[in-house]
Length: 316
Ligand code: FO1
Image (cartoon, rainbow, N blue to C red; front, side, top):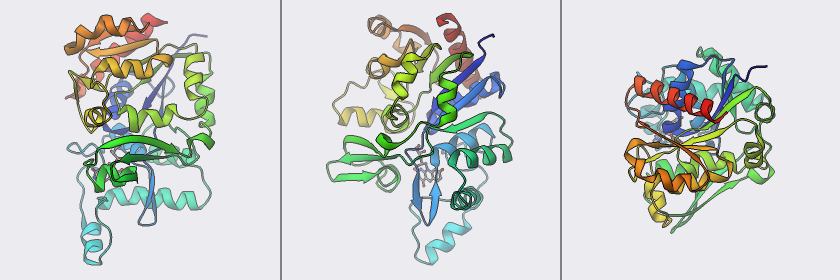
């Protein structure tokens, strides 16, 4: 049987960019996504799954191009009315986006799994690719800061990433089961490659890798595993990755990210600006591909996706 299936691990806005590029090159039979659910939280009585929604909106062309999260062409009547009533409006829920959270919450209350609900919602928005929540069990990223532990959205949105971080935990991960459909995919013989997308290592990828058995499954997989650096020239394209690294006294380099994932990787993708780091990353026992990883246009997203597929093909 020809190897023909790819799996991308993603979370957040950065990962969704490459996910979109991959979705333009590979059919639903050739590509599945495993997405972080550590950002999930209960808010206003709703179950909100931000990284699932960022991926779903991005793949369906519905995402807000300025923020990367929420929907484009949004209106904010609900938020305005909630404000008037003294409700919590720090986490911005647009009128169109609200429908997603209402529908998910109702389906969960009806006993459906997050996986089943995600599949229905994605299909409703015209997405054919399989989007697998990393687990149907609750995993919640929590951030340790100088002012104590806080839930992820409290840190990321309410506190706007201001507190200095000193650590993370992915509460519930020790008891959580990897999505069975993801386990099946990881063990399948026709897997041609696994990609760790350029997402924040600490709050988008590590929650996935923290699931019992996940790192081992990647190590044992017959498919080559590559990661694309979320750090370019010492800066993060988007979000608090570099700020977190500095606060944790970690070198804000692509090399550090390569080392962080090295035990599960076969290859690492550096931006051409970081070509000078190639030998260092190779000394970790990894193959290295240097290319343009900064994605400003759809063409950039597709070009990087193609580079990654070519790289995986070389590693097979
Ligand atoms: N991020 C913000 O910085 N501010 C917001 O008000 C906000 C609202 C929001 C609503 C729905 C959704 O799916 C995502 C939202 N995000 C918001 C992003 C969210 O915090 C994600 O966890 C980040 O994208 C990190 O992955």
